[in-house]
Length: 388
Image: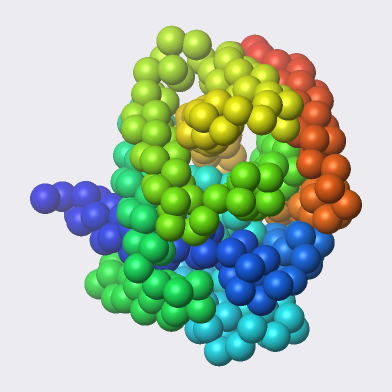
């Protein structure tokens, strides 16, 4: 096995442990807040918002550190936050403690395994490491493979959540994610140090950050609230929702395997337009139907349609920026996405609290439409090559 392959195997083992923990937390967190502790949907939205803002702040910090300090130390530091947050959540159900836990662990649920939902502050560093050990030609394949395996383990985590009470699930998530840190110790990662100077990839980063911000708004409007939607509207018990969550994660995981083919057939921009446009149309139906089976089908399909485009997006961004600016570029893109999503999360939390469940879905479709227009405007022509 080559040196690059060994490093990628160790990284995926670290990531898989986090994916199991993330799957557990994504499933149990709304049940813990809404049913076990009897807080409101607005409280849940504010907790998600705090987590999103904190994740964005940590991502920016770690993005600069990974370029200026090196990948390994930064990745270990970022990896500690998820188990720490889970332990804090296990320690107490008081609202101020939960805010601290969600901010440390990043319990935002505003993205997929690929874009860093729970524990998402570590995601830009992982993406930069993958880019280090791959080429532009095979990068989408590796991003897809990592996301596929993460989705499988995230699905397993959702199903495993049935084995624990909501509170004990946080202890399990803390142990599992902490175990993943062991795989970072033997890794040999880049120690390249950048410089505090003006970034030369600023134009490209600006384009991705603007589209990322719109993606963040759409994510924040709906993604954290898909499970709460079924809790509030259909009163689905945790054990049953765990099965639906498991199935949805599996569909998304296997769908990601077609990402390289979609990129080859449609190209980066058209692939985004087809998959996310179709997903937006389906989500418009969710608040309009009261047919439970149809609602479940939409829930199973739409996360997959959203995540399919992510590997091609990651490849495009990493191919268009300078190598010594990659950590900062990825972090700034994530900051734009998460910061924008924080307001959307609070908005939907309020809408759910006042029982206006439909409006966020309509706004979601409109935002997706605007973002797709910008994708064609910014990236519709042949993508720029990395500046050397």
